[in-house]
Image 1: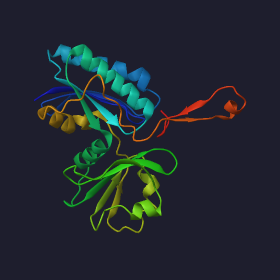
Image 2: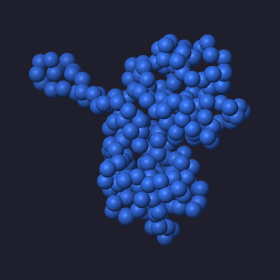
Image 3: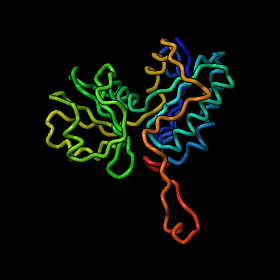
Image 4: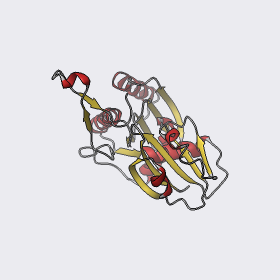
Length: 246
């Protein structure tokens, strides 16, 4: 089985894990936000030092590709590309919405085999990045940016399936899902590197590698520049991270 360095920076969590033979060898996580630029390289060096101390050869670099925070995704993918190029190993990209589903499956007991999983990542105001997956990670609804309201929820192709909703954008949907009897919400599910292992190992077995030169984050919507009050006076403008601040 492959030894893979896993990088996850799509939300306010910065995390890195070294995995091999379906086991987590070492990992670092920080949940404070605004730490990716300062902590990611430190966490990566810790994992590489661990690998060298055990004479382990890295087989691939895996990175969570989004959707999520523009800033976090750029930082994570840049680090992963540099490592893959420098170490001459393949690059694996992991969909962050699928990662949330896998994390939920691994860490929570879901009794209903026919449940549909609806991950939601905050994208400001009443908008979320979301998709709908079955237990095999087949996409019933492809990843997209969605403004949550009564109509968009009513249009979801959920039938009578039990629903499992998770992610840092899911609180926005609670009231809109109140009349759906089979909907359950799982709090505090966050994308972290240790939960990337199943998806990245599957990609490695299938040789589903990304192009190191041309891979880009899965943003799902355009980068936004918003004006601050000072900008009205001609001083400066601010950049919106179209998801949440890091």
